[in-house]
Amino acid sequence: MILYNITVNIEKESEEDWVLWMKQIHIPDVLATGMFSENRFYKILHDSDDGSVNYSVQYFTDTMEKIMEYQSNFAPKLQDDVKSKFKDKFVIFRTLLETVE
Image 1 (cartoon, rainbow, N blue to C red):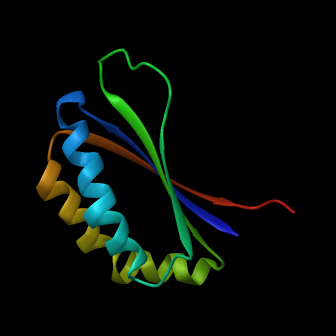
Image 2: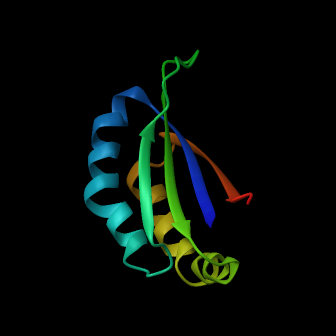
């Protein structure tokens, strides 16, 4: 199993709108690509020095080929959607992880 983890630092003032948009629009759009079998959405429970809030958005897939296809064919538009909706309100860090058997 491969996990595509996106850690997001969002400004406190935009948090409520961002969470709602993620749940209603963005996550369904990512899942609609067919590249991921499931997802998880977590709030990270620690205080940020700057008052911002952190989340982990996780998408699961079974092959690296699906990750590559997602990144080539779908990610640019979906990432642009986030940037245009919440520009300068967030910082993102992306990580790929693989299950260790």
